[in-house]
Image (cartoon, rainbow, N blue to C red):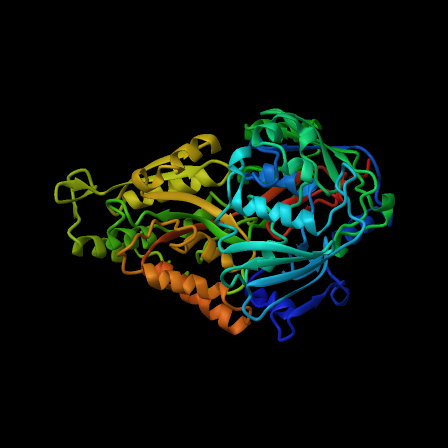
Length: 562
């Protein structure tokens, strides 16, 4: 799926106009209904039953939805829980889900949700406003006694959730939070899917040790978990409250599949071979070099780019030598992004032309300005700053070589070859890149000490909303580039990213989003690489795999025709 500038203001047409109330009854139409499409493929009837065997690269570690960080963990969380709202992946609109309608005050500090009646957790307990309060309180604040960490990044400024009646929840913030409405549909890391009171009462260890302790409202239920082997989900009977764009009447409103077997297969050749042999029905994490051959063999290639902050290196403005603006700017323009298209990326991906993906509202294209490949200019910047080419081609200043340490993660198949291209091209202008691309557990260990050890840390942040810039790049929130007190850009960056959160007016919000992007590139704090994509290969009998707005997969409408 490839959605560009035309959707920049799409969300505001729904929730940013003058009226401050949204009624779910007025917006229940969609031209991109995966349920309708799935039924049409089967001649009007989707098949019920069977097990989808689904391969992934990374081994899920946390099954608690509020702890989920990796793509496989998010996929599991999103199939066993539901959200207040559903964000359409094509239009960006918000649809009712567990909330039937919502409103907000003019300051964007209070959000009122009216809840669907008749929803239950899989243990039979009712979902109501107390469920919303208990989940949001623990999400935002954590629980030290249970070993549950707080999530301040997503919940900055959270004050409380009030419950004036069993089916009304009022969420309060101490500062404007324009991005909160789309966050109620969020399916990425630490997502706001709802778990039962019995789960919230369990410790982090108890949740990890027994799948029966993870209770959600979603269309599937956890059945079993073998670390580094597989996770099995089983269809929940009686589920009948999917968001309108996904609803189907077949199977009584429950999911079509009996089970989903999510199998951890780290080796790309083994994932591909398992698909070709029939041991898998579908696999995530398809190698770019495998896309064309698999398609030629008759397999489906299903792909969607990931909205949010692109795959990028956040440059450490607090550590030598990337505390030098000239060095950061040279890294920003000293390598050719278009070269990624010559062997690293396929048409499923896009070269990054800003810090945020091209489908995010407020995106601006910097391909011919701040991100234009200009090695001559990069060399001039370094020369003027006193970095002279040494005998081995690596630049030297005050007796120190221009060596930068870059940390990457191997959770996406295109990451390492993309980073190696950057490493090779920066060497041509005299910058030595010491590159480490690590598995998730090792990456997390290094990430914890990135401010003092790494000049650039790579990653991406999924979110189809410009508030992703506030979340990732505000010095008061994510501070991915470690912009510390006294830095000339600090206050301007705080102001620009907060301005995104202060309004839902499309003109004002787009202007604030542009100002934030401008500052990030003016000070060369983030070096975008590419727009990531989730790429699935599936056999011809698999239908109805849905990519949501964060490109996570829902299997509620998935079925196997044979």
